Image (cartoon, rainbow, N blue to C red; front, side, top):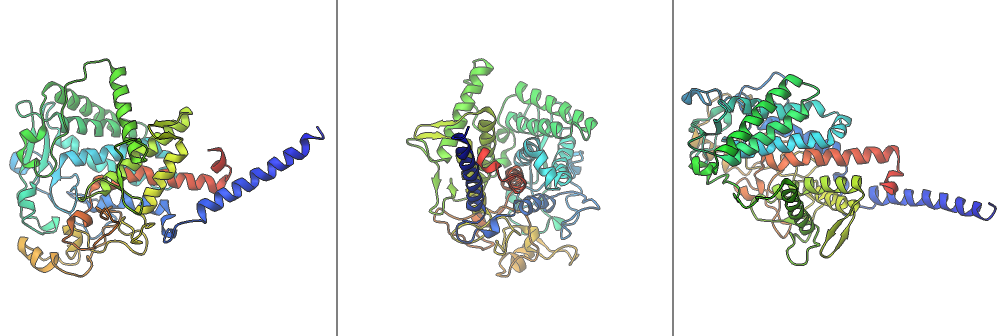
Length: 461
């Protein structure tokens, strides 16, 4: 006992020092320009606010984005169906069903996985509102077990005009998939969105949860029974959101199929982490994942979400990720996630936050019709199709309205970014860019909150 006692004392002191320096390393030692990257709670709050900017339909009394007003109030009228509501996908005024469904799926998944952390950040109610704005629309759009209204408006005519949603004069024709014109991909994605949202609302609104599950089951059966790509049925979708590859090669049992999915997922994760022997995801000199020139941030945010989930899975199951070039633990993976998020929030060579409204330096000229034109609340005068281009699109001034929480397309493969409205490849934002980050911001905020209470977690976790 007399021999072991000093060892125990040394171990205790060493443990304390390890915790102290670990916490000091994470919170004090930081790359240049990274101080603005720390407030993940603020980023979470602003990311949820963005979805209110993208709302179509009659806005509620508690609308927080006050520069927006009612729009698309006759959507579906020409076809004899109520399609008022839902989300505009990006900087235009079309309601594309496929990215809207993916957006709602990711929001719901984030709440399912990190609901406790979202509650801790005080944003649970807003996250449910963001999901429900989408699912309320899907319920309307699913007018028959084998009918799903998949799009309102079309990109071709919409892109001829630069108008606020409140002033739209472009076509609001609605397009559907049905048994004669199938769309398995969009039916499946919408089913996933409604099924995931059903889980979210199971406790707080069981009746609504049951309704969503009922629609999800019908949509899944519809997509499975009448197979086909939705952009073969809705030609105007091809130029904007084309279908997923369809392969009918999987005839094995579910276990084998899931193993294939896991193998492909792990191959992709290893590629993101630069641990495959041949094919890895490119990175910019500043360390950002880089897939393509046009709206690269959509791939960064979805990869960050997937990596976060898998890190937590490995942690819970006491496993590691085995890549061709080495083995990675959950903390290695999560550290990389943090590096990607911090890059988004300002820790990058341009010292720019690509989440609009976060930090002191963010894009001022987002490629977005509503944000770039004087607010309808400020000027109720009608702004025509070409008038918007003539008087607003080409202006060098910052947008009059800040699209808070929008994740823009981001920098090029050399970390360079031009904040110009016409530079839509870099300055346009989409709902499916921001949606995956809701869960990731919540996870990071939750970790910081836990560490502030118990610094030992940095060692034990």
